[in-house]
Amino acid sequence: MNTENTFFNAGIVQNSVNFDTHGNGAAGTQLRDFLNAIAGEKIILIAVQDEGSRFLQKAFDALTIIGGYHVSSLEYRGSYALIGYPREKKPSYVKQVQRKSGQGPSVISATVPLTK
Image 1 (tube, rainbow, N blue to C red):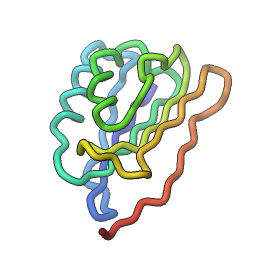
Image 2: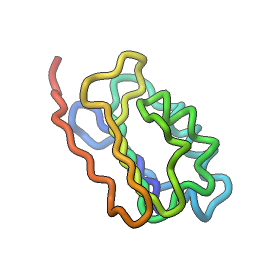
Image 3: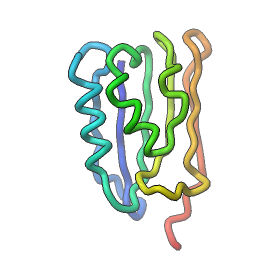
Image 4: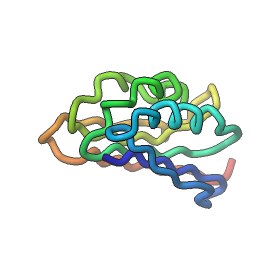
């Protein structure tokens, strides 16, 4: 399982981190703390592949804050992709895709304007 978190500022990757929310019991808390520490105008990309639901619960609220929804419905071996944003007012490109086990990967795309 791989919960991949990457965030951008002005089109430049600023960080890329993995949280094993299947095999590491502390990963949900680590993911929550990582997301809660992101400030400013950042674009956050999250992808779950293979199995990420086991220890994800502690990060549900943090994922919701950046634009995720129905995160608790991620099933065993399901896939998930999110384009998130940490500020309260969400841009139009914030969205997610979620698929059940056996339905293939969650593929997401969006056009993100890099100027205001």
